Amino acid sequence: MNRTRVFTGSPWEPVVGYCRAIRVGNRIEVAGTTAMKNGEVVGVGNPYEQARFVLQTIEQALQELGGQLSDVIRTRMFVTDISLWEEFGRAHGEFFRDVQPVATMVEVKALIDPLLLIEIEVEAHLNEETLMD
Image (cartoon, rainbow, N blue to C red; front, side, top):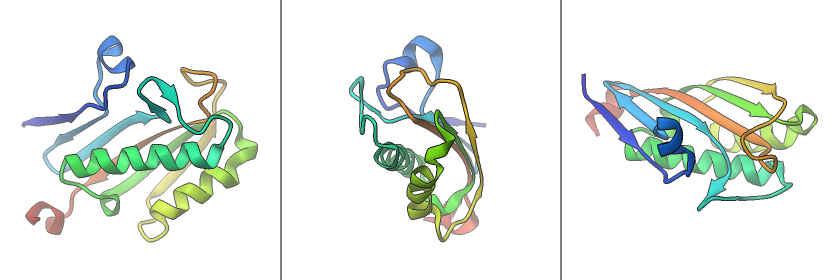
């Protein structure tokens, strides 16, 4: 089965050997995505802004592979401070309020850069209507 990949230019993609997102058949997987742009952290110290940026990046990757947010069936959020859950959740809700995928949020000790507050990955399955578009 063909694999179609999306790369975002993250400095870690070639070093670690991964892509931002991959589509195989009607399934799209988006790798853990952080608030990085051109090697710089976006929204330093702001959990809501970081989460929004991450979700925008994920939405763009989905679209490049023929998907959309309504195709998402699972999100996983890894956060460095669970006490900020409402800010992370507010951003997540803005993108997924009507979709309501299953979602997990867990606190982790650290992310790859100490200024990063959240990393999100998603799973999407394209439905018949999306496949016909």
